[in-house]
Length: 289
Image 1 (cartoon, one colour):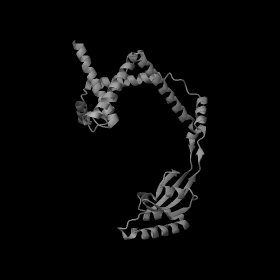
Image 2 (cartoon, helix red, strand yellow):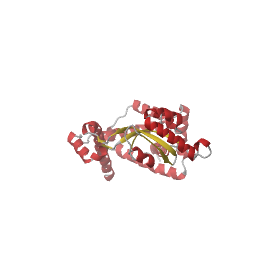
Image 3 (tube, helix red, strand yellow):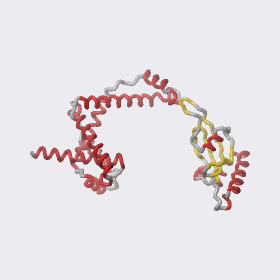
Image 4 (cartoon, helix red, strand yellow):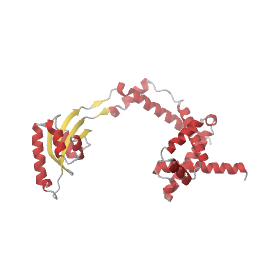
């Protein structure tokens, strides 16, 4: 075996070690040394696939012509270092993963070169026209429909026979008294929630937020979407206790108009076309190798 071949194999092992590290963090959020045998097998398969794909792309004419400045590699290394508490932790992680400084630098150069080539291929995707956007909008009109939403506050009184004030009878009395008062004085709801509610939302005057139908407990949902804006209802019992609710505001169902979503749709369709072209190009490489 020649020295050149030996060095090449060492380089390949270093690149694969980086790919294994990357896959372990991406998939499991852990270092390779913390994976079990089955997990390690999975990330090794993924790492080999990633390295093979990089090889395939970087061997194309575009890949051979690509140039990545040292400063870009330096920035990429710094971004990785920033994920660690300090430089020592970073170096220890690289050491445990079998990734030397030269391996990391070469691996990141390849990664940046791969991304650059794929981006270049995507640049050839046909531009998205206004007609394309309008067609997509009309064919996916349901996607731009926003159902009715209601802004709701609530007061929760729990039921717990271990406490005299929270027995079934006492909790019902407390919730009923609050409901009766607030039905005639809904403007007091935030203050009463802060004073009486046993839900963390008490700190915000009982605000549960602005919700569509189907997001709350079914018992609450049914009542909330039956009352008018400004009305108070309750007590309503759910699995967590008794509720008094205020429908603060009703936002009617609406369909977002095309002008409001045109720019986002252009970006979405552009990225969709770029990805489709990139995928098609990679598939063509695989069939010719």
